[in-house]
Image 1 (spheres, one colour):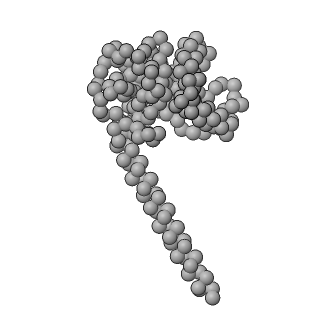
Image 2: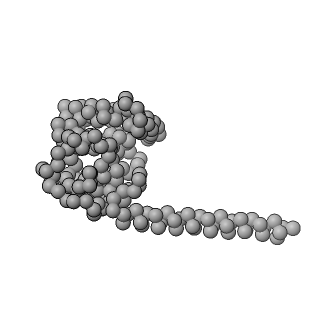
Image 3: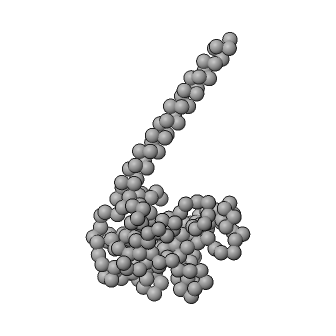
Length: 197
């Protein structure tokens, strides 16, 4: 009787092991393909940006591009790319990380920027080389650029911006509560200005 009871358990554990192995293999293959992809895929980080005409930073008129919600940003030193919200203040693009970006429990892309701030941006079918410059909290530039960003993504017009802003705000609030950032004096977010390099 003991042998017959152990047999189904062994089969079940064997099947569970096969399923775990298949899931791990699928994850490994997916990660391998994403890191070699020409840019990010949906919400997943991708490889370096290869397609799109490479243009000089000075030739890009950023103000009209502010009607777009997102850009693709390659972190050159990390050889990876991601899709980010952006905003334009005084004809200069800005990107931000809103959730416990530095000194938190999670590794975030701003930690890669601290090591190497060179980036490539792809927007409107063009690529442009730049560098990210941290805008300190409390500075006039931070306040003005952050206000423009918040107005752009306030969601007051409804639709996609409203839904994305609501979801994003919830993630930030929950994340800050879980990591303890909400109780700290210094905010966890980071705002970056995109400059030419």
